[in-house]
Length: 476
Ligand SMILES: [Mn+2]
Image 1 (cartoon, rainbow, N blue to C red):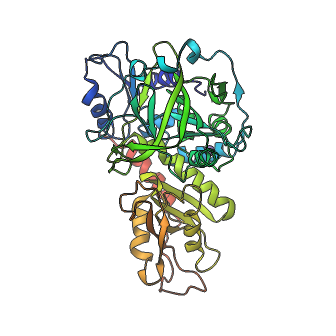
Image 2 (image 1 turned 90 degrees about the vertical axis):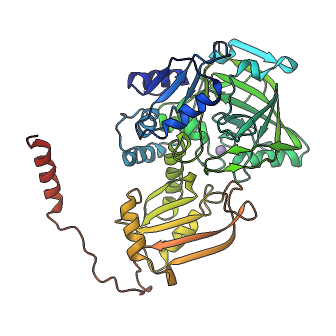
Image 3 (image 1 turned 90 degrees about the horizontal axis):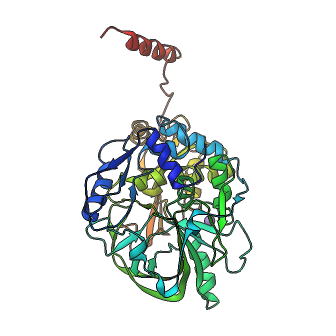
């Protein structure tokens, strides 16, 4: 069953025993972030955590790590909690093919219960803010969806974008926002600024998990995140009209902030501990002015801890990165079998493919770098044969160790694009990229002497079953 809001998702997590209530009184800093950080250190079944007893805060309710384990990721897709990673990705791919599913417009969103306008806005009153890492330059909103439209084509539903961008709360109604140039919001902002305009935005906080996953998924520019959310949750996605901007926002959000990115204005933002496991420094970023806030009574504040992998963001972005890369490659190269881009948001990707002819795998690796996500992320690709599972890292290591001769298997491309947050890039945003071809050469590439592969014996599968049965039934 699909979740229409954060609260129904929390209920499902609770029912599966995947929501832990922290009842003792905690300090907003550092306890909330430290506890969320700890969920990434207690194994793959980590729960979401909920705080309602926070020293100095009145009626605050903060939830962390809602998607931060494979169990919770499965529940976010309405799958049984023990669904394997590979099954979750296969199901994600299957549902993706149902795109587009038209959204359902609903009236009377709960977030319309309270409204504050203009000078009366004080985000510090409405949001229980706290810092995440001890070197952060301020309070961050890092799990909110930001909705914007193409200023040259504002009625185009698909070009309306829903994305997650980090935002620093800098004043009562002032934010800093990082628009990564490869992301859709940067295209909208660029068009607005060319016209000398501000870019209106609607920021939605406290959302159902599927729109959060979609906000982190690199769709094509004109593909609608709401129509993909409908496909992914297997029912029309509920949207409502935001009162100030008229944008389409989730019907089930806890809080809606509306305002503008002020055109041609930049101020220092950061530092902030990032998904790369490194801080970004303070950099010039855009400035947001909030003009209207709408929120539910006693809104639940949702945030996400990130830092040294793995943390919630790695689970959130893992399948959401693998699946679009797979779908976009598969559309042109049906030989592609699987894509594992779960490491550091796809800065590294492992791709298995059949080969049409010599050099083919290297060509597929290059293409991955020019997909919408690849432009800003895919810095290294490991290409493996069709019988190697990219999700099985020992198999990948076998391919790397036995199939690679650097003399012909490395393709290094100088001075390519990557997001500035990549700590190795120099200058920031420019890096060499590398394809490592760990596939077996095929004609006319006749390098090496791979002879005949040693395959599992034909009877092995039968023996796997037999041994498993014997083990399951043996006397303790
Ligand atoms: Mn988009």
